[in-house]
Length: 77
Image (cartoon, rainbow, N blue to C red; front, side, top):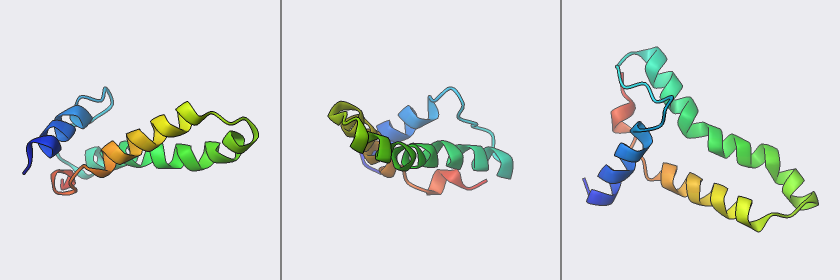
């Protein structure tokens, strides 16, 4: 595992709503946390066409890119 991926895992696990114990409910909660930024982007995207905000769009893309670096192996519960 590369150092960048290990740092990203630690960053994601420091989220206040991240559940560390194993179990399907905790895994489901953690998957929800990983999916939420993508859903938010697609919900807010039509409004960004009406009220352009390149900083918000760039920030969401950076957040999603960081989350996409997360390996799926630690999600098993």
